[in-house]
Image 1 (spheres, helix red, strand yellow):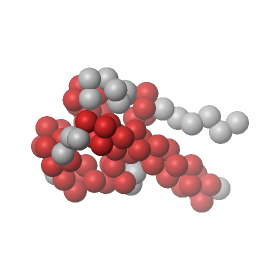
Image 2 (cartoon, helix red, strand yellow):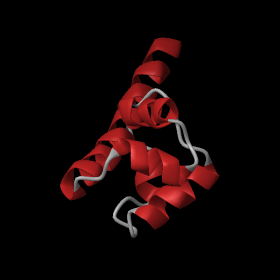
Image 3 (tube, helix red, strand yellow):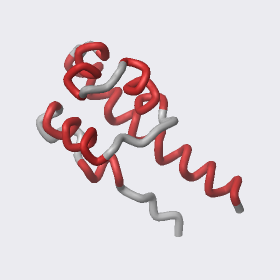
Amino acid sequence: MYEIHRHITYIFLVSISMKLEEYLKKYGTKKKWFAHELGLSLTSLGRILKGSHYPSVKTAQKIVELTNGEVTFEDLFKKKDNK
């Protein structure tokens, strides 16, 4: 059961990071600048983009603001329906 949960969590995190990564590429936004604006290290942003860490609520709010809502809270925190 743990392995299934871990796999589902990995898929969920990857979908979050893909949405943010797509935004950064679409507008040519530098990761270093974006990390600075979020108050994160480049390493921390990299972990979010790789899908190995969730953003905090505060960081998520900043992501929504910096992307003018193109990346939403729903994108960052939605649960996949596995039924």
